[in-house]
Image (cartoon, rainbow, N blue to C red; front, side, top):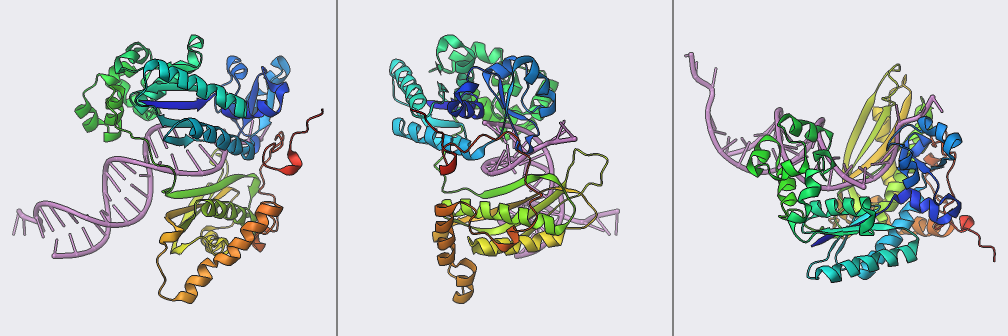
Length: 420
DNA sequence: TCTGGGGTCCTAGGACCC
DNA sequence: TCTGGGGTCCTAGGACCC
């Protein structure tokens, strides 16, 4: 049996934990640059505000229904996520952190009653530790656990926990579910399935797996088997083997000059390097991408990237130098650029970095002592205390973020104040 | 006005080899 | 007129997820 633990309206809930005045109110959280809606409280969903809609289109609700709006605050969400996950790990063996607000866990070998008890305990404990509500679905496979979780969320009488020990337990639910709502099936595939007359999850479960494999892919075949209760997707081992790492963002305002884009790229490289250190990995290849705003049809479009291979390194300054050269290579004047980013790939654990033939070069390209110093200074005095010189300069790239709440849990200066 | 950011996995097809 | 065939490796891009 596999359980899926999912935080309810995660970003909105994080905001509400530290701003209790938001509780019970319609609330939306906006994307980077305050562009569109990426999270909604239950009350906002009830108003009919869709996922991903433009922020401009919800302004009317501010006046008519007292809709509250917040810019996204990833420092807060990331930290709250760790707290939720740590609590789960205290109570459950083999927790797989699947996303910022979801985790799978192995809950085999328990009777149905014991399982219900355990799930309710998890819910209470997470709520007490973090203030976040979670829903839990448990079933013989990951895909069915997703279905169970959906039911746990939609049926109040289940009190947030839905357990289906047999594949057949889900028959009715699958018949009422569209294929596009099944985990792993997106727009394209559900449209193609419909061409063959398969529109419900129940029909998909009953399709011939071999035919599905031939017409679609082995991926979809696995989904069919999982819907039948045959497990094809195992719990994954924790971290270790992250393969790539990305950091990039769209600008607060279009940028035309190379020198205005550099500081942004430096910032992203630095951020990426920090995460590299955290997981004790090094990158053997780097890709820089640069693009204009594809939604603005009336301007000249350009979307380019450049990749460079190198000896595995986690040296921020070296990564930045390589990234800046790649940026120079792809930059061409005459465009209004809207986004830049860096992708570190071919990651290897630092302990596996092969010895270099020329030791001196190796030393220069890694300089662990220098990185250690930077890391320590920054963790003590603030994340961007020591930066590459190329980070200075124009900060025009910084995103608009009009209504960001404080970093309540990760910054001394922004801790909530309790009046006793 | 505003149009997210960070990932994974799989497949097709080209290059290359013998 | 004929113009191998089978294998591997790599990359780009598609599809999906939250």
